[in-house]
Each structure stands twice: as structure tokens, then as C-alpha cells.
Image (cartoon, rainbow, N blue to C red; front, side, top):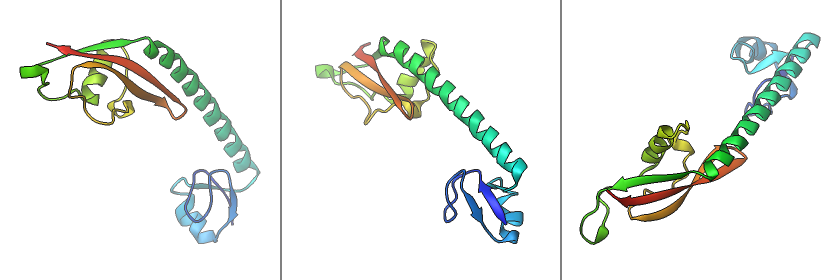
Length: 147
């Protein structure tokens, strides 16, 4: 049976490829799991429409990420921390705290998008990289000050 792959599948190929597979494998596994469609005229049109819509969504997400990156680039965050003797910070500033600061400013950024290599354990000014999209990374200025 000839199929069109809707998503990448190890051993068969990548999304959009047309492959010949055994009838039972296609009917019992690939088609019910949503991995493939039977390759006929209607399915080909359906796949092309799905690909077009996916491209439109990707373009919208990229545009939205670019706009957000411009806004975040000029943003500055301040995090007050408790310090001890010789300005040693108690605890650390983590990506979760930075995400909460961004949320308080009105930006919905997930903590996994904040590319902090390790928690911040000192006072100072830091540039925090944020990955908004696979192609777009921006940075936010973070001021860690005494509470």
C-alpha cells in the first residue's frame, strides 16, 4: 500500500515522503496512529492543505516571536536578594524567579525558554538569554541587588 507520512518515522522517512509498505502495517498501525495517510488523490490534497496551514502557523509564530524579542530587548528586571557578610548571596536567582519577574511585567515566558547556564549567586548586572523560537533568541538585562 502506498502511504504519505504525516510525521517523521524512524525507518520509513520524514513527513511528506511517500512510501510503499505492507497493507497490514499501514491499516493496523500507521493510519490509526496518525503517522500516515493512504496515498490517493484526496489524501494528497489533504496533506498539501495541512502543510500549507502548518506553514502559515509557523510564519505567525515567527512574526510574534520577533515582536516579543524587540520588546524584551529593551526590558530590564530587578531582583532583590538577601545577602550576608561580604555581600554573599543567600540562595540563588534561578530561571523560575526570572520567569516570575517577566510574568509580573506582563510577558508569558516559560522557565525552560530562559537559557540560564547556572543559577546566579552574586550581585551584579547580567544578560539573560531567552529562546523565544527555534530561530530567535533575545536577552534581558537582570539587576541582582541587595534586598
